[in-house]
Length: 263
Image (cartoon, rainbow, N blue to C red; front, side, top):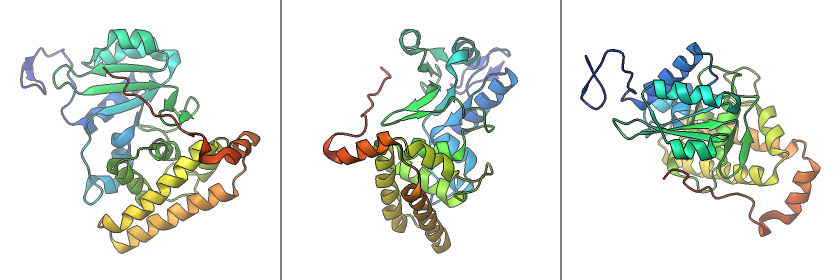
């Protein structure tokens, strides 16, 4: 017998989620890889996995749950796999929304596990079908940054995560440790609303730097990288759809306000 996160004994062959949400995220991705399933981390745990600065003050923070993304074409196999890791499915939700998202819960702690499929869609939609398997553990840095910058009602945790990404990773490079400006410009050059939200949030990140307690070189570097992203957006190619929507501007709401789909 062994002890689970609930303090109760479990049979040796019974798998239970880890108490540390960060290590649990790593466990899920590693186990999925062994089963041949494409699963990558999203959210704050993904930022922690990619950013050394997220492991210590002033950019250290707590994480409440794990978010991952996979592909809808393996959703059935994925649902069985997640249950094998010790999670309980929300059967009604998964039956209704299983082409876009699957919901599970750790029965011991009540901690949710959300599995997105194909795209990240909240205030704006980000298609990740061709991006999920590009890198191990998490989605690529540019996409991870976009998932954070797309939040209209952005909170301090999101601002911290964005700051960590920009503090630890250069912009403009093509290697996996850089934030790909080409990817940012390509996605945002097709969607004025998405780009508008990103610009607003980059300004908020910049305004928050003076109160973060960052070392002077780090704060200056983050500011420079924000400027680099903004410059790339200024010069990036815009589609006709982007240009037509830009004429309307803020007179029409340019984002969605996602509801809490858990019940």
